[in-house]
Amino acid sequence: MKIGIIGCGNISGIYLKNLSTLFKNTEIYAVSDLDPTKAENAKNTYNIPHIMTVDEMLECREIELILNITTPPFHYSICKQILLANKHAYVEKPLSLTYAQGKELIELAEQKGLYFGCAPDTFLGAGIQTCKKLIDEGRIGNVIGGEGFMMCRGHESWHPAPEFYYDVGGGPLFDMGPYYLTALVTLLGKVKSVFAYASKSFTERTITSAPKYGTKIPVKVDTHIVGLLKFECGATITLTTSFDVLKHTMPNIELYGTEGSLLVPDPNTFGGPVKISTVANKEFTDVKLISPYSANSRGIGLSETIVAIGENRLNNASGKLALHVLEIMESFITSSNEHREITLESSPPVLCELDWSVNLGEIKTK
Image 1 (spheres, rainbow, N blue to C red):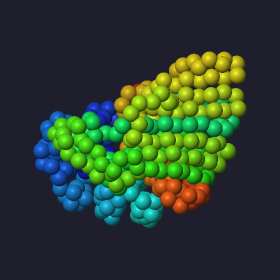
Image 2 (cartoon, rainbow, N blue to C red):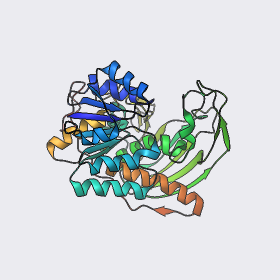
Image 3 (cartoon, helix red, strand yellow):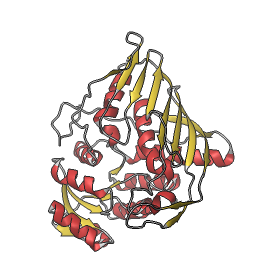
Image 4 (cartoon, helix red, strand yellow):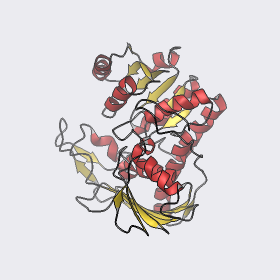
């Protein structure tokens, strides 16, 4: 399928590489960016045929699906344009800035008979898929609890343009939370309700990376959020996301079951290690990964979406899954502001089981 890409910023490189050279069912037909230099570099580096404006891309008959990797404030408006132009859409996380916006996009896609996909797709990587297999097989029994931690000092020390991380739609929850929450929902299913506390430790940040060294950033979002998730399956999980922590020793995700415990790898990566401890073997031991997709495979969700279109089924990295994650995040903030438990409206879809005994670049339904 011929793809158009809107946005050639920091994250675009791995998409451009994988969609050009790794996945066998994707062909980048055109790129677009407000900065002509970025678009030109992408075109030349990956031998992309065309540079287009957004309007030209929307009108191009050759392009069937458009990947939107702009910054979060533009996710909703550009995705709406894509769908109104009768093209399939795939967007970087988060789905939108608000649950209402995300819900509108999903409903619009359904009305027009179009596919909508959303990052992150790291849950389709070997690490999380191996964990899912272990849980589905009952290797740790019924999951009763767990915890997740995404904590760092922030992105202003390394990112060339980190301002949007501290603007609406940013912060540790909306920036990194989707990786953790998508992984947890993949492993455990629907979140029934949440309760959370959120705070902002610093009102201003100073960029220490090039080329904006010394620039001050106003912080417009909460930067330390602790949430409690009650899953429909009965599990209770705590999740901490923070841009205020200098150093820590906490795990990415640990899950505790009636028959054992599972160490889940960093959900912002595709690989392992995956470690399990059971009643029979109390020490944590490594588990062999079940899939070849252990390296940075961003774009696998888009590739799988194209497979789903051909098979006339729901894609796994779907807008509906992302909508459930978006409602969880929004509900964390609402819970903190209103000091109450929030019951969720949305439900994640049932995922299609994929066959991971494939070669790199291929996606196959089981």
